[in-house]
Length: 352
Image 1: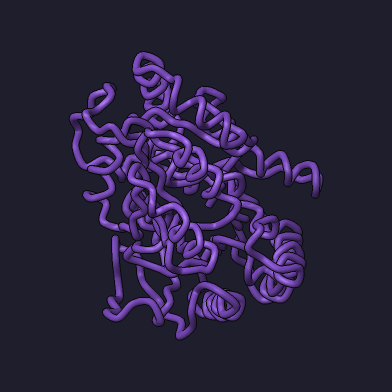
Image 2: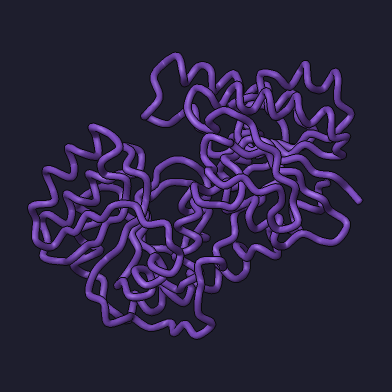
């Protein structure tokens, strides 16, 4: 049996973000000869359980996000030395400056998912961007295997470091709570978008488009967590056709919003393959996506794309139902082919 330590996430059970959903489904779909040990943040979990999905849970008394994530990851790496693991799976690059020292003491194979080029995100200042870029360099240089969750990231790794990486995305079939999904336009007359309220997700572009239209949008996100989100909420919540909704984590509630929307709008311009996008694709929703390499790779160039508020406005005003039905069928086919958790888990285990 191979022992796999997972470092870099908030932990299990999953109730936070994309990496947490990843390990939730890796452990749920693991084969009998794999034993996972998952490092978790004791700051996040009030009820600390010892095992979940047959994975052992090990707690670190630090926050897994923000500045503490650096020390959280490093302490997690140090602790793996006492568990004699065969593979160390690192999700994200925050603690990868420590990898040269870790490799000196550990014989474990190091596999790192470098995430979505975090250093390019607008939310970081110059110092943070420099640190994340250096961390990425150490991750690529000292890992035995690099995982890219999108072909655009794999292309970047190849061009920047002259190295190949394994392309493994995320699953989205966990978002389906019913086996009976029709590829038809539902009765809901609203568009839907779900994301963290950050500039690179083109929130203002999307809202500006709908402010010039009578089409309805329900937009779910953490509006109150930043000055940026609060300003957008104040400006656009006054429009009758724009409904700004606080974060929702319950999968059944999210399913109801998704299955009943006219189409799903994906504004991300950074971050590789986005979990919320592939979840919407699995549910069979038409996809209107911001035009960038990440999204074109994720949707096989078959979504409907916009690049500014005018082009999005044209899509929501002029795209007829027949085109939306056709698009929803294409998105569902791609999701089944590329973004199913059983396949993702098999791809990961093939690297161990």
